[in-house]
Image (tube, rainbow, N blue to C red; front, side):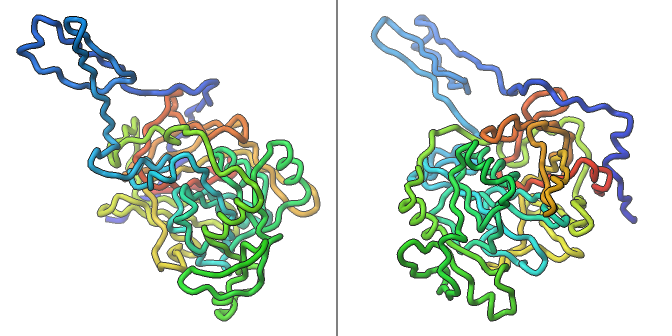
Length: 406
């Protein structure tokens, strides 16, 4: 039977979506189990999940404390929870260290990119001319492979990076507005364009750079026919050198999980639609950000540019994600003669959360660059998010009707 393609805007025609004034957290109510002195000898106390530790004292000498359980944590696993995915696969030595957010080209001529398959989060956003770029977030700098090709910074990318307190890594910048934004919000950034070692050929991702040189132009890509501007790369070792040499603070306070993560496949998605194939329209240049659900691994595989799989040049792996977010926002031309765009992220908006073969409508808000993107259902309650990697499409509200799914 031929599948019918539906337009999302048509499904919600006539429905008014109101962005909430405040964001509420939704969680399980705390439960307390108290064992009395008269039954303690014969009754085994059950440990229950609770938001705070409680205790019962017997004969003023023995104290029994309740255990706190977390469905995301396997007590036999020595790794810790990754704050950006909710998966227990991060090295404990990385706790308290800042992530990095890298600006990556998404021009057709600059694909496939390198290292993006290992990013926890990828944001895709429009730039001048309707092209899109990627912001790839890595929680553990030591695990970052060769990553690129880099492109110049835009305010929207720095805004998104600041929301996770990431160190922002880019190659050049928008000179009309970025310097003011950079200074106003005290963004920790590394402009790799200032530390370019020129054409180099790494060996299995390893390269020797000296002095204040932390990036290079990939000679392998040059030999394959790429032009200069599509060949800028670095890796985690060189970024760490830059952080040390430039005196950037690598530490962060523990802020907990980025979202209300639950074990994969268990997120409650109220009033959801079936969604195993979704096409996102950014612009005439990027009309087909295509996500297709795989029932075997419960992730969405991404293609673009006439359904070409979006792959990682290091591994050949097609990019795939447990969660896909489509966030509609106000985007407008700055009229500065260069075609630069401004995003009104502080106004928030509406969108969709897609995971585990389902789609739900959401509201979102990001009041300031330092704030994370807060995502709620239509009743203003924080949504549950399946543990796993996430892809964010930051789309012009004017193009919302062109998003389609089946």
